[in-house]
Amino acid sequence: MNGLDRVIHVRGVTKTFGKGDAAVHALKGVDFDARGGELLMIVGPSGCGKTTLLSVIAGTLGFDSGEVEVFGHSLHTMSQKQLTAFRAGHIGFIFQSFNLIPTLSVLENVTVPLLINGVGLKEAEDRARAMLEKVNIGKRGDERPTNLSGGQQQRVAIARALIHEPRLIICDEPTSALDKDTGQRVMELLSSVARGPGRCVIVVTHDNRIFNFADRMTEMDDGRVQRVHENPSKSMAGH
Amino acid sequence: MYRLGLKMLFADRAKYIMLLSGMAFAALLMTQQGGVFVGIIEWTKGNLKNMRAPIWVVDPKVEQVNEVKPMRDTDVSRVRSIPGVAWAVPMYWGILQARLVDGTFKPIQLVGLDNATMVGRPTKMIEGRVEDLRIPNAVIIDDLTVKRLSVGRAKPLGMGDTFEMNDKEARIVGICQTEKSFFGYPYIFSTYEQALQFAPRTRKMLSYILASPAEGWTADQAAQQIREKTGLGAYTEEAFGESTVKWFFKNTGIPISFMTTIILGFIVGVAVAGQTFYSFILENLRHFGALKAMGASDGLITRMVLLQAFTVGIIGYGIGLGLSVFIGWKFIQMGQPPFALPYQLPLGSFVAVLLICTFASLLGIRQVRKLEPAVVFRG
Image (cartoon, rainbow over all chains, first blue to last red; front, side):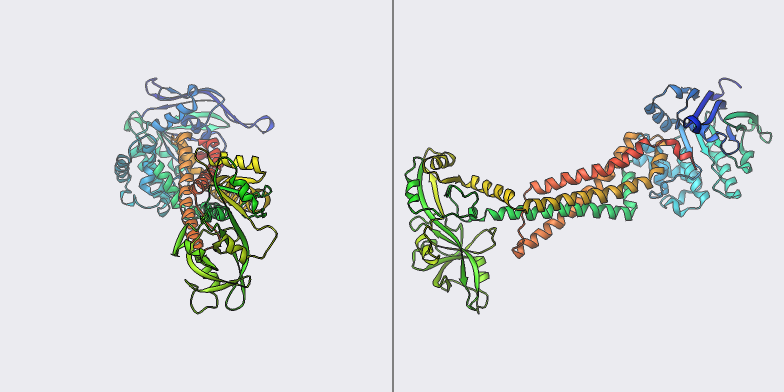
């Protein structure tokens, strides 16, 4: 791997939940890299540590030892306040259960990352409308998320994750709550709008129906990365 | 973000209404009961408001204005002789029975004013002249007397009409307006000599001596001189009011009973608002977690939660205060129960509502602050 390509660099990360007999060693010295411009999937059985690794990379979970560097920022040296600011500016999130706020409209949900970053309401709404158009849901901006189908809600979540143009998109089981066709369409959309040079998309999934969207796969088991391999059905040159 | 925080609150109608009701009820209970309490306390000072004088001289054992231990008539002269006293006049005050035309009796408060000076005269005359009290058997009645003693009459009592007190005829020469008093009985004014005729005879009849400080003396200094030189009790008007209020605090269950209600209002407010707001926060915990994951700081979320709590508190307070004022206005129209709303009361209840909001939000804020943003990845 070319060092210049490497945008995420994880070395020897360990994370244990609980103490004594109840201790669960979720990460046991994980080494992991991601390149700019790629859609990388972390796969593995339930409880293998993939969501924990994702949380560590996203800066939402502290770790016991090791080093994590994301786009040149060393997360292991940052304070909580710096981590919060880092997440606000550099990371977009797509969650398994969408995590849209049901009491806000679709448009308002999409504006949230911009408002957190201090963008004015008018500009945030204009940009949110444009982003909703981009994910083909522009006409539903004034509706409540609960009035939308699962696929449409995930489109809103994608719009929210991209609105502030983050460099890292973190997706946690983005298709597990969707049927096969909807999941495929969501991944197509994610591949087309989220990927870009200088940006990295990391998807944690156990849904093998969407493996074909990955540029590379990182297989985890028992708190360790077991194997990293290129997706044979895709070529990085095609991006 | 704050606008979105408020939308989150308003959109959850059931919780919002529950929160508003809790806050409004607490504010209503605290303000309305406080208003009735202040009203009662004001009523205890009714005599002081209706018979104005700079210094009140009473038996040394008397602590409040609604209590009378008659003094000797010669005490008036003793007070007049004190340096620092410009003048001193006798006053009679007692509760008598007035006879209605249907033969029933109603209690009234009879006030006997000094014949010469009419010190302690009614402060607001509606009809007639105070000086006409010098006519034999003359009385001035207040508007409440008109209402109470007109029962069974073809037309309300008016100028020139007569009624009986202690089997003696009283003729109305004036109608005045008075402040309500603690006993709630109407006031009837006559001269001191006339009052002694109306009232049942006892060995001592002098209820109060009303006095004024001489030039160059304050009322406080003159009252102190009277106390020292005569051994009688002497108060300035203000001090007698304070002493009266203190007496009611010390010797009646009124303050404790009202304070209990007011504290209950506060506790109910804390319980209802606290529980509802906490459950609102718990229901939205996942969304707060998502906001934290997306980079919302603890400070931002704390401010959002506080804004939600204080918004609902201030709106609820407004509703509660509005209801209190409406109920108080109705009370005043009906004449009872007493009600008064000095600015300290709504201010105090506002501070209490802010405290309720703070308590209610603190629990929720604690939950939100200790929430790890990674919670959003857990299914």
